[in-house]
Image 1 (spheres, rainbow over the protein chains, first blue to last red):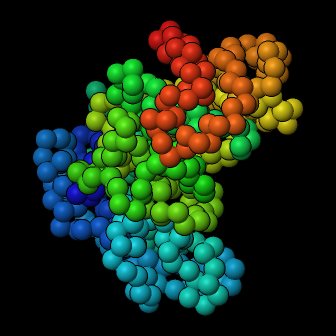
Image 2: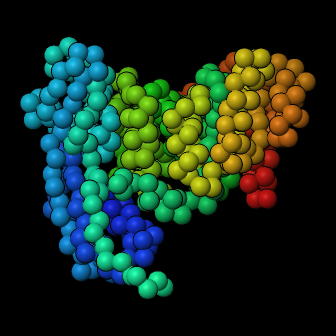
Image 3: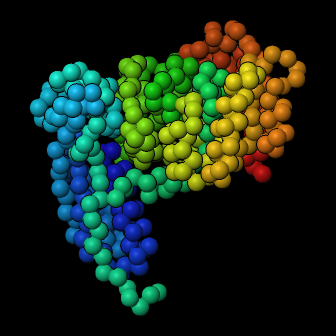
Length: 138
Length: 247
């Protein structure tokens, strides 16, 4: 249910953006979800839809894109994907809450270094917000 | 667009006061002061949270004697920190155990944002933040992300520590945050070495805690810690902190 917290963050950010830009309507929102965080997409989508019900977002179309996690070693330059390595359930659970703890449990498959960058697929990110602006002001 | 930034201060509307304990140098006793202060405030009847932001070397769980392999935050529309001797306690240690945590600066920033995004404090009076040593990512993130943060600066009487805490305070001032006072820990005599600093920067000295070797015997045992000489000194300081927070 940690997905609710992230869904709340998305809703809050979109509403802030809409307010700042004097949006009359929020047409669509594109949300990228990195696979490293192992978000339960059903719960996340449900949370978004529930939280959007009572706001300016009730008619907004939400699009969700899942992104593979990609790592690059800072030591040897090797790149690898999350699905190329084995991770146990407890580790996945810890990474689910705090993706950065990956550095504790996942090492570069080539040189064994814990010093690498999570190039993509870390967590939740708002890719775009499409609004209809109130040109007359408020 | 990072969705976490917008939610952090909304989450902190559940917290009446945020107090970050920091210094320029390591080894001055920040974690012990932050943890013991949390226990003292909780014993006074306040609802208290404690967040260990020293991701590289978390130690508040060691001071509190928390078995992080078996005690975990509860998942409920975010995470709810477990109550340890009345203090809602959050730490990266729940997720990494006692493993070393090799994080670069931008990763530390990411982890701080994530932790503040997902943690639900559910109406507390005081949230104490144990900052790691130094003046880099953790300090800057806390100062920039948390609008109403109050700072307590900790130093030892050593010249190197006083020089470092001065830099720490100047940075908080640059970012328009309130340093409510300085604690001199491991003080060696009745004339606090931090006096010059408090005068130059117009920041009150909250108190001096002498070097108390046997406080080490209280680590991992909050009841023993609360009855220690260290806690007695800190109780007086706690009163001063509360009175300054209420101004």
